[in-house]
Length: 511
Figure 1 (cartoon, rainbow, N blue to C red):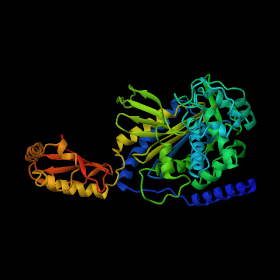
Figure 2: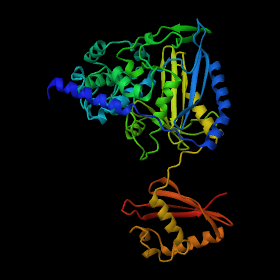
Figure 3: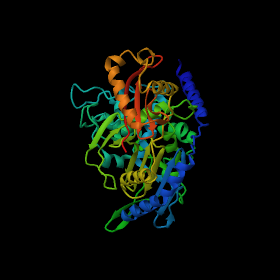
């Protein structure tokens, strides 16, 4: 291909991609009973946020709650500009710092899905200035795009330093890479948070797309999602909308100078509002659970779910306690520009915090529950992670929320009906064609009959068979309601076509 044709092809491809994504509207689910329970907790959440902001001396503070694809509740406190007493609103624009990182990694996945790059490509394929980089050891592998996505490139943690580089130019970035940067680890062996690594992804976006990373993200993520007020450069924002940043020092607020946008904006430069960012939050939530619906967002749902996977373990907190005092161990990891955490109850949190001189922010979603929260403050490195975790925990516990339930597959329903008809006497079970070849080698038919007879006697007459609750499309559990006791039954199907029962368990429900 001639270079001019290649440029034309690239322009046409991304224009087509953008037109496709512009029609995206997040699905909004309605469950009146669920919403009623959530709404009853919102005054408590307002009180929690307000007390936390006052205790931590936030000059301005704003937050939002997203449920099932919609921003259902917001709140704002204080001022975005103390000298002018400009009141904070959900349209106020805050610099969200490292919450910007997932926009950069989303753009990388868009390019990957378009066949423009591979995640296991060497970074120096796109940044020749890295070709002579001396790694920590002679046996270290080359730095790849995947290393950069997951904070595994071996760069040292660089928050204090990186935060001051926001306005650096691409020329300064490349000069740094040519200067034999220092490493703390060999690539691929450890998690270590790196603003530099995400910044290099921003440069790769420019090299591959032919546009600045800001232009690419504006056209392919922000515009399709309707985030029309989100900016990179603070001088483009109306004075009454711009949040100024402050530091709490010696019992008073001191204003921090705002930094201009530059090469490092890919790791922390976005300036947005609660209303705009809620659209991005809803987009992430809409990727779950996997489904057959139209997939017309700016990034495929499967790629969003890939973004949410724990690729690089970052921590384990066996002594973690929720604000209620309930101990619950957690494990955390880094995804693609996102943090991931799972607690002892199986809840999975996805999101990211952000901190720069003058600002602190955080967003967290629970894909299983279809809920998320967002919080912005204009205080230097404002600690917003604990409060968002507290709010989510309060919402789940107080509203008695349950994870969103997968619909049962037709084969699960079919096997449930057939298995129930065999219980408790297992008559003709071996010739029924329901069971995989391993089943009666692993289970004694006589033992199965004896176990079922004992349990059914305890239960009495079965009055109701509840719908199966799927763990996935080939495994589930259901309840047999009896006059005297209830029984639970679980089974797992094989990967054969048609799937057969390979594992089965039954027991009495505990009261």
